Image (cartoon, rainbow, N blue to C red):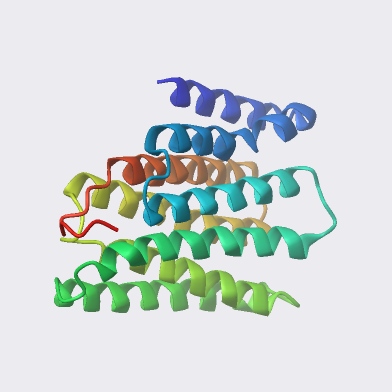
Length: 219
C-alpha cells in the first residue's frame, strides 16, 4: 500500500513537471525497493545478492539520468550492469534443474528473439549514431525476459509469475524509452514508461522475496 501511494505521488510529480522534486523522488523508487529487499531477505544466497546488486546499479543509473548528467556512457553502463546481474540471478534458478521444461525454454527463446528483433527493426531507421547501444539494450532485454521464462518449474509459481510479469514490464519500458527518444516524444509515452518501469521493478523485487527453489539443493 505504501509503495502504491509512493507510485501515485511519483506520477503526480511527473505530470506536474516539477523538475526539482522529480529529481529527488525518481531515484527513490529503486532505493526504497533495495532497502526493503535487503532487510527482508538479508541477502542469504547468491540469488538475492545478485538481484540486490542489480538494484544498486539501477539506482545509480536512475540518479545519474534524472540529474541530467552529461556522462551518458555511465548511465548506459549502469543500466547494462543492472540487467546483467538480474540475468545472472535468474540463471541460478535455471541452472538448478536445466533438464526441466525444454519445450518451454525453446518457446521462450523463439518468442524473445522475435520480439527483440522486431522492436529493434522498428526503431533502427531512427537511431542515427546510437546503433550499438540499441543493439546491446535489445540483446540484454531479450536475455532478461528469456532467463525469467527459463525459471519455469524450477521455482514456486508465485515467484515465477511475478518476475516474468516484472521483466515483461521492464522490456516494455525499454521499447517505450526508444520510442520516446528516437521517434515521437510525448508526455503520455513518458508517463507510460515511468509506470511500466516502477511496476516492473516492484514485481521483480517481490518475486525475488517470494522465491522458493523447488530443487532442494538451494542456491
